Length: 260
Image 1 (cartoon, helix red, strand yellow):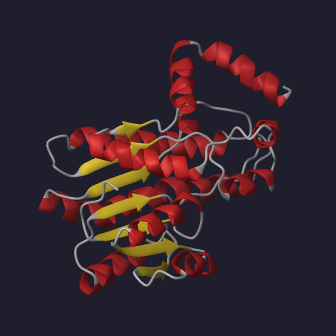
Image 2 (cartoon, helix red, strand yellow):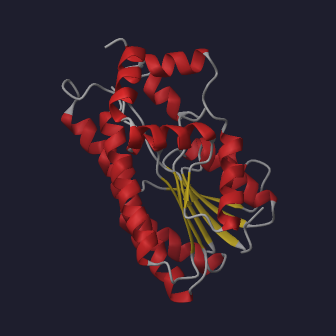
C-alpha cells in the first residue's frame, strides 16, 4: 500500500470503490473517516473494523464537511489522505431529462468536489504534505448518449482538478486525478434503474466493466510512482486516445452500439 500516513478521509465510503478504499486503508493500520449519505452502507463498510469511523454526510453540505474534518482532526489527528469517490450516475437523454435532476447531478458530483477541495486542501498545502485523490471519469471526455448530464459533471471535475494539479506542481502534496472507465459498482445500478442505456446492458452481458479492486490497486501504484492523472486500465487510456484523434469515428461506433 502506498499510504504513508496515519489518518485518511474517504467519501462515497458506503459502497463501491469508496468502501474498498476505506477497508483497505483500515486493514493497513490507518484510522479512516468514512463519509457517505448512506448510513447503512457505512455501517456495513465498518463492520469488523474498529478503526473506521462513520460520518453520515452529503458532500453538497460544505458546513457539514468542515464540521467532520474538525472532528476527525480533533479525535484522530491530521488528515494525511483524502480519497473523494462520492458521486451519482443516473442516466437520461438530455432532451427529455428533468432539469432538476441534471442540476442535482452537477450539485453532487461537481459542487461536492469543490466543497471537498475547500474543506481539506488548504491545510495539506500549508503542511506541504498529504495525498489528495479525486475520482473524475473517462466519461468526462468520451461522451455517450444517456450520459450527457453525468459526463458534463465529470468533464467539469476533470478540468477543475487538472488545473488544480498544475497550479500546485511545486507542492509536496501528492495529487492524483483518476479517470476510470465503467466499473462494476453500485453506480451501474443507478444507470440500469433509470434510462438503462444499451451500452450498459451490453457491457454487463459481456462482463466488460472493470473490477473495483483493480482500480483501487492501480491508484496505489500510480500515486507511489508520482502519476498526476491516472487512466487505471487499458480501455480508459485507449478510449481517451481515440477520442482525441478520431472523435467522429468513435461517435459512429458508440451510436451504432446504442442503436441510434
